[in-house]
Length: 327
Image (tube, rainbow, N blue to C red; front, side, top):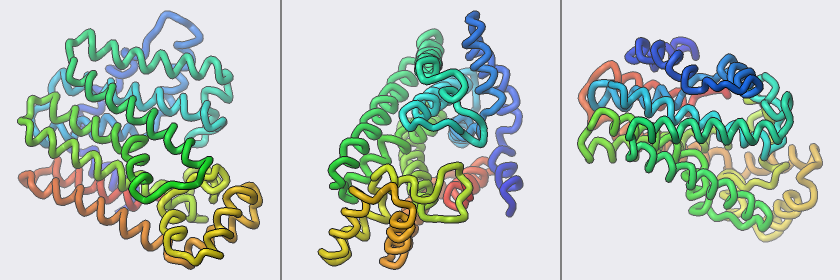
């Protein structure tokens, strides 16, 4: 199945809702400040696949009938996600996103930070103005987790002492927490029972972890087309699962060489490539892929508890797309 056909399968049950969501989201970003409006239009024109709203709508439709509350949840999560991307580009000093100039590249970091703050506050106000207090609570917890996850990763990258358990804690916080909020809010928006809401939240956790593991594998894949150079995590001294596995299972001498490479030679292109090859040769990639497939299986197992439907098929396709994507 091609990428386009897979995405069409995923979107098919919610095609009408996604079409209606577009003007709803545009309206949420409207402002009387001309500079901000120009930047918002730039963001809208270069939006990605809108996976967060897709997750909200699919989870909602799996558990009930989509309504106004669902559109609020989709808008809230998309505004939050967009805000974090704008802020991430500032933190990472990244000047491109999805092949286009980032906000900080065009309007400098000060403006980008303020734009991110605006998007975050708009999302929170949409929830408050519509008395969606539970939605606000779940999303606020996600924002807290994301900030903690990023800061925890920065802290540990200095000491290079991340264990596998800590790695999973970090990727839960920085990635899976928002994806889990999307699926949980989808179920919540249609007044699903508590058990179904919890299932959808857990599904989002497993999907989000698999998603981040796949992202971490791209760092070791020369064919990856994700807009960042191979070995970028190594250059930033980020310990992801392939390296964590190798450090745990290699000899003391090899461990010293790996840690020295990360501490003192992480900007040396030749040394980075040598380290990538070492990780591959020592089974780090195979082990990481196995872990990714474990979380895929957990996500699939939750979907299997729901009745067969076009929506369920779309969500299964989404899980497959998550681990098979090329960028």
